[in-house]
Length: 239
Image 1 (cartoon, rainbow, N blue to C red):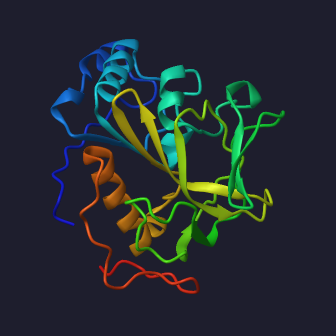
Image 2: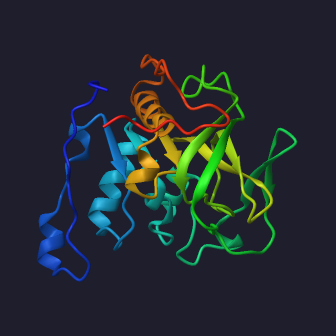
């Protein structure tokens, strides 16, 4: 959208030597926001502590899809993302959150954290339609073919669910667009975005752009596209 300059920092590959990890030392404080779609090896403790400080001191963190699955053993990361899946997550990691009758429900009962059925198009439904990130979007719009995560669990502290999608697998309305407060920092979290075709959706683009701006500034000035998905129709991004 022309509003962001992006630097890519790639961590060492799986099984890399310790010196490769020691050489990877991103300077988070140089950036207005950090975006992650990472699900891999646990970051070294000095990087963990640096990232915790970055977000707690007012940094912006954008959590996309696979980053939801990362680091089940890193307590502060799980507080940042609010809810996560897989990696052995269960009721010990926190409650399962879903929307029922317009209310946010917290289920502390036993069960695994993280699941999804076959990929498919699904509708994203506004839960807090006046929030700046989704304000002006249709009450329900169709998202491109994607994995619809369900049964996410976590500390769920300071979480606001802005929109959800109904999962036929779980039978519940699962969080799809969230914000989390962590210290002075703001976190934008969406479990959408499994593949390139999942991201090449006007609704996903607008959500990511506006969510990123909100995480950085607390406001949204990026306008919605003139054309937007409807309740019945996915709108792909033009090449």
